[in-house]
Length: 444
Image (cartoon, rainbow, N blue to C red):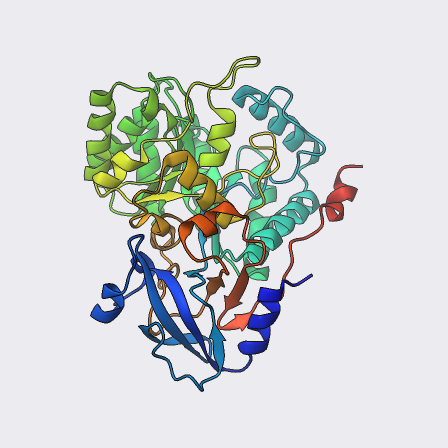
């Protein structure tokens, strides 16, 4: 049932031209903010503005309270307005299999085994399609603008999941921008299978990737991957050191390989958990290389908090996330994303980037000060995905916005914001999260 807030906005924002008046917007997400707008920002960096929407785009950003009082629109009473978020790292092909394949002990090893069993037994084109569609409907209803998903691509699964992804990308065109990354082992690139995977990814307009850990001939495999990415004009995206083992230092090897191969396209590394367990000098040396190589990093706080340092019967000793503040201090582009949803790697989640940002703030201390951390779920992942204009608010930008009743960050991050209102191209989004019962036929 729509909230009173939703109903009020629905009534006030009909038509092609209207104002969102007396709104708070994170200053770090405003493009070309005027000196007057900047001067009016509060101590948390929230700017007080009026936003003019015309024919699906933002046509004006002016100091709050200065819009013509008689113009159509709504007084948000200092409620916040954000650009629609971007989810940089997901697994839509794994999503929502928990009802038929739980993780028996919550460990990483348990997750790997459970997913492998379910994939071999159930991941037909129809099964993957149904679960991907469900996940995207969740993300869309919550306001997500773009999603990058990893696809298990070993063996026959690649020939199933990539064509499904192609169809989903076309089906969701204009609603959610979709990108896909192949997920294979490093050893794949030491064989002819690496050539086949690279050609498949290029054919489907994807991103080349793998999961890296300390295996023999890792440097050789990385050189081969970068060569294939360069040959086919592909960006690269790695799962990296998803472990608490301080001896797992493949991020260091990736940075060295990127520099050695003079790779100039975008590089993203996800997880990088083991950095948090290494000696400070060792971690700093790796981060310096990462900065030099131009590598971006995405952390997955909810999934890694759930999986890392899990020992049955023992309280975890660390949070499982990487050194995001130390990266940010080196101007390394950093993002946070959702990762797995309702599968053996993470039994929860709803493809909701507002939840991700809320939990990331708590887990990673992305506050006091808030600074420009809101960019980690908006402008920064949009830039890494190469999405021009997404994740920001400014004159001329498409009015893809999420409107909150919440005012300061304490209000925003204390509740799930289930009464949020999503605008896509200036129009109110009429979408609801799907009922879990819609997937029941997959589990019987």
